[in-house]
Image (cartoon, rainbow, N blue to C red; front, side):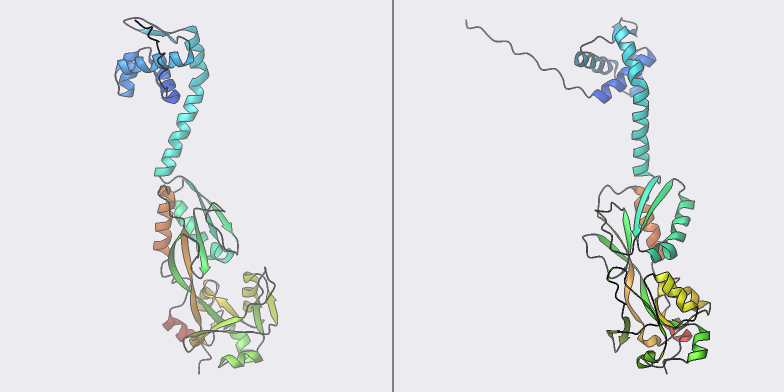
Length: 328
């Protein structure tokens, strides 16, 4: 009869994390039966898990009797070594689970500077009062922000809709409103058509990247037209441009996010309103992902609910006509 070669049975694959957690529970409770009750399993399953861990480590961890089990010297050393680390690990896992399912953790948002200061800051404050466990990292840059490269959770873009492969939600239109202070108009007169603007002192915006002044944008017979202006004051920062107009230094074309509030309180007067361009808008965007944390989804829903329509950041047509001058 030929010799039959014995093959060695490979050791069972051990889930070390689960096995060590079972070992700690059995060691602390002093009984496989109590450990089984605590874990919702059988004493046989606990015994098997501990035995596999012993085989995996090559050392006996428990003295076993029919009534109880007690740690060997090696088992006691292992318990002292792993218990604190296991508590920290399980705590970290639980915190991560709560953050994914609940309203705790960081939300990273990208936006332009004016949008962040004027639109988002009050929104973030209100959301944080409702969800105090949420923290925000607000990346304010006046350039397109890539949701993947910059690792943001969501972004807000003023202008045209995002072109990247993201989910985009339109929130409200953004108007470009020619306006000036009542004092400037009293001293220099009111333009009644686009050609009249060339006789006025004007305040402009210079693109920081290219250094070129931005032409003004108007709506003429349903078409968008651009008009190159000569500026008495030209600024590379939108807030400085706005301040120059408020100081009476000239007529400016200001976006409605910045202009709506001072127009409503009478500090600025809208001009040539039938030519006001409103092709742009504010868009919320985010990458499509199945594992989106609950806090991010909650904030997206909150932002859409609060900002859609944007009455605080643009003027309805009837209101704009009622407040405007120079369309005679």
